[in-house]
Length: 349
Image 1 (cartoon, rainbow, N blue to C red):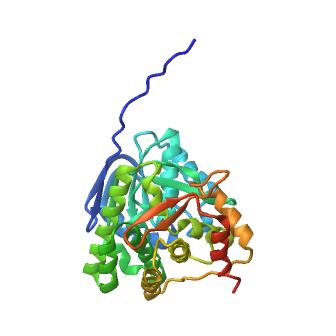
Image 2 (cartoon, rainbow, N blue to C red):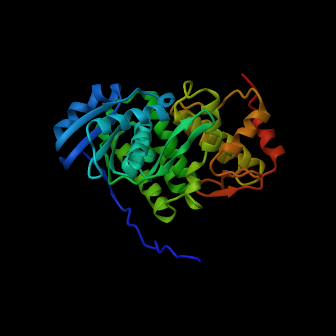
Image 3 (tube, rainbow, N blue to C red):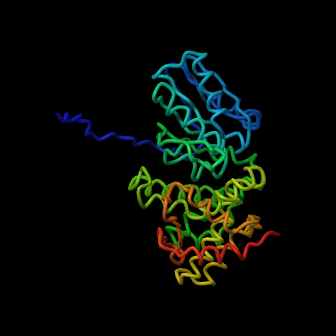
């Protein structure tokens, strides 16, 4: 006997991204704000002044990518159970990409899923991590290898939070903006070359453009079965670097910058990008103080780590390679010798 379990239906996961001063927020029921000590010290009072709910709790977790772990998520879940949260309760992710990823993951698995809202406080999380519903944690095998897709109910991007952002954190966010431009919009890349993002108006324009680009891609491919994978330009290489350095030496955006430079070298070797274009990308990254090189101790070990990438399979590795500036291709047919030849140029410093 074969029984058909009819579950074919459409789920509307649409939501709004608000880019402006944080509006007054009113939520019914219980609300938990997940944040870290740094963000709480700088901005929690501001958020609380804009927020009202029946009950509000603050869950503070350690700062840093090295704490993006199952242990930290379990701590968040324990606090929710202690305060008797239910399926109508809400989480607010209040911080950078680490907070957003962990909070979304916790929301996605608590009682099989509750709502959450993103209020990103770093440039990187505002232009990338807060939009799209990717949630997850790291483990010893790599970055974001445990997680799920769980879309937020809304995203509130307030440039006010960036006023206290350290220069290095700001630059890490710029790397993700450059990523969007190189892969999808040559005109935007040219604009970035001539407009300083230290200017508040230019920065707001760049944030809006980056979010529009990502939203368009996510709308076409929510679960990353094709086009959305292109947003991982620079990440395939960058994630290996993050894992090799135990998430303590570089910020995420910094490894993405290095990864983009590496991917560009592969593109040049394949004739998909000119050396001049690669120089332009590298120069823009360096302009904002981003690192563009890394010392690889063991090329073979670095290459083997690619097989843990979520886009790869047992026999092939999928690389995100730019096609000039403004285009991108997903390639799973690149010869290992070519990739290792590029990696060999990054001998241990």
